[in-house]
Image (cartoon, rainbow, N blue to C red; front, side):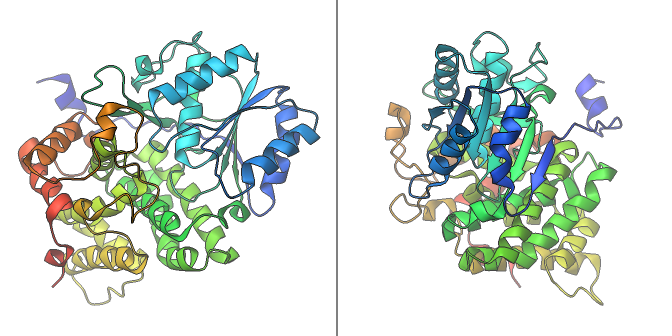
Length: 430
């Protein structure tokens, strides 16, 4: 018997560290004093720019007000690329920086985590650290992660996700690096910063949270300390995502989604993920589409596919999403969970399959706009056999796949992928 076959049931669990956090309205006002306490004098501020919000300018000027001399890198892309990381590392080294502040969603935080790892290893290429705990130097520069979306939970976790565009330029590969040394020094979650998040982006990020909540709840790891957080996070999404999407200045909804993100991050940090994320990573690797959007499209399909091995868990998720399961069998309640997820997706206006996604109608995607020739040619999602096959193969090598509750092979997952591209969600409703 092979070693990988022996460990598939995950008999040995591991709890991974989480950072100190400041959560709540006004938390972002503490960034300057906290940076000084960490010994920062010249932090590199990493962000996508958040153009039109004023958030980066406000925090940058606040850092200067508190006596710091920040340097700005505002070119992080959605689905951060290896060159985003390495360009920021070069800027960090050229300016003799001594710490990091990332502002934004998971893209900014993930790119920053990668930059910290590279800086701690004298600027080695970030793609060398794909996998589990590949870094050799545990002493990284301090990092404050300031979230402006309720989505990835990257400010909470030991994982960061990077797209490798250089190893094989004709076949980009999006990978997850898990590294305890990448955990941020301080997480700052302030719902006031979420007010400027557009409705479509709020919805997509919210489904990222639901994926983060549901996958550790049904995971093959079955990590007991994660289960309560996972289920409660799903409940918070069910309660608050609609209001946060359509009433962006609703503090209760924004704060509810903030805690949903943070709690889901705690859940998957040690409880694992699954094929929802594997599908998302593959599609964004090939089309540069938004991670949360990808998760939203994949989620009901993967839930339906996984039902036979986790009826009881999905039945609980139905209750978390507000379904009255009184008198239902576990099978009926699990089916109702899928229906509830589809209803939520439709209520917040998310496209229902990948071939519905267009650059001109679905902002935050980069179809045909990427910086490499590969992405320039990826302007339209085809959903043909080539698309389905390459995404299915990418899934098999994704670090999230082993945690999926249902065994994943090319033959079993390909129909799921095909449905994500071309299927009708009404197929799951009865």
